[in-house]
Figure (cartoon, rainbow, N blue to C red):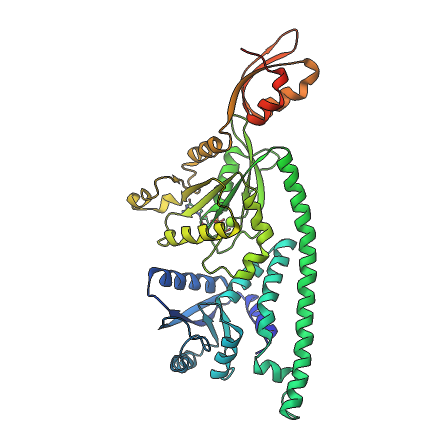
Length: 442
Ligand SMILES: Nc1nc2c(ncn2[C@@H]2O[C@H](COP(=O)(O)OP(=O)(O)OP(=O)(O)O)[C@@H](O)[C@H]2O)c(=O)[nH]1
Ligand SMILES: [Mg+2]
């Protein structure tokens, strides 16, 4: 099958609101909680692509069969079931290798569309991408996924050679030329998209450097998709948003609502300010190419002074979601950044004992705006742990320093003397060091 055709078919299907019935196939290697969780998740991924799962076919194996994913008898059974159900798309729970796709297609007479987990995730990401950067990142991931899958699909080869006619040798020759052209075309598209991404990455790095140079602290919100990262950020913006930067971020009950990082400014009543960054959500078996393509976006997490790990406390799979998130964070190299776990959606949790299993976490409900003050004071404590109670005598011609203290610190008292302004405040280490010459003992 021509992967291009396969991809564009899936895209075409996406444009209809109607759902299409599909069958899912999964190899169960250890019959544990993880397997059932991934199956449930695959169904959600299908839903996000407007596919309705009407049958789940599983096979218990030590590991997927390297040639055909499931055994040949099982393939026969799959064929009978999908025929009986009149379904023409089969969704596989894992990423299939190029040869597995080819062999499954051969066994099923090329009569069905074979879609694997990776392709589903790529499709959802593609649908959700709204910025140039996100679209390019998804494009690179998708093209890289496609590249090895151009080879070895017989229907693709015969289509490119115009079907019958000529000997096998001639057919292969023409097919290979076309294949080579397609491959080169894709490689060119990948390097063009990467070049464009480099430029975007550069301007992102520049604005990040400016933020760092200004000593502005950053808090990255990370976690599983749909855990409520964006909702929590919106609730915080409502309470503490900066007047010039209080636009809400996008929230929706769907997988991967957020694809691009967005930053908002928070100003607390004690004048402490910091930036919060919303990030793309994670999912189990996040395709390798996708993580790689989104690396520059995800790297924003590495620049953060604090990571807020948002967990859906109401999910029966929250422990697996926590470990998946931790794995992705570790793979990015975010070991040393202080992290605070936040259990969200506590309004839905019936059994409070379960929540107590996470002793160092903060419990909130972004929806009911509960627990947010505690969250903010924990963030404040972590970010501004080195606070100095200083008194400065600032000369009148240095009014900008007065504004700096008033803008960023909790001011205890202000007095206007003949020599200048006497100001007592709880200041950050940075201001403490910067204004040492105006400090007086008090
Ligand atoms: N009941 C309840 N629902 C919530 C709460 N917080 C978020 N939600 C809902 O959960 C869904 C997902 O919320 P988002 O904020 O978009 O989740 P996210 O973590 O940003 O998701 P992605 O952007 O996909 O990674 C939405 O339907 C929210 O209304 C909460 O505290 N309680
Ligand atoms: Mg979001």
